[in-house]
Image (cartoon, rainbow, N blue to C red; front, side, top):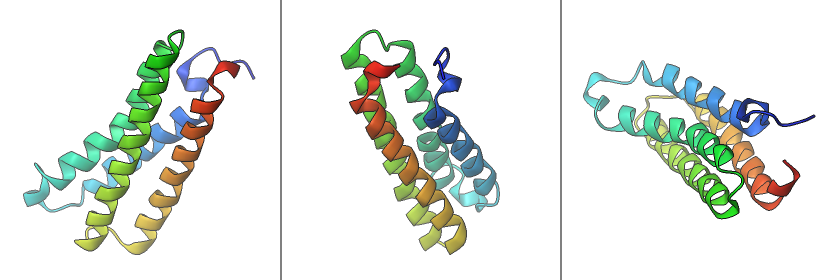
Amino acid sequence: MSIKSVRDLEVYRLAFELAMKVFELTKKFPKEEKYSLTDQIRRSSRSVPINIREGFAKRRYENLFIRHLNDAMGSSEETRGWLDFSLGCDYIDQNEHDSLDIKYDEVNAMLYSLINNWQTL
């Protein structure tokens, strides 16, 4: 399959889907979390696909592309940390946490692979 747009990257599509799931889950968080946990987890989850998108736009420049993919991986890990807090505060249940955690692990594996094989795009 030819990669013509960032939307052709499976990792981008998965990261976007996960950010939307996080958004839906956080709608039920308490109002007092609006400017802390809710805001933080939404920002970090959205940062994953946005960094992939920015990196893809700059893919001609290896260092910039890889930097954005590394930033996406960092945001993915940040989101996983916020998911741990969400579970610890009983805002999400164990199944919701585990499902998202596994999917973010997949995103990280895809990003790692892309970082090491970016020339194949």
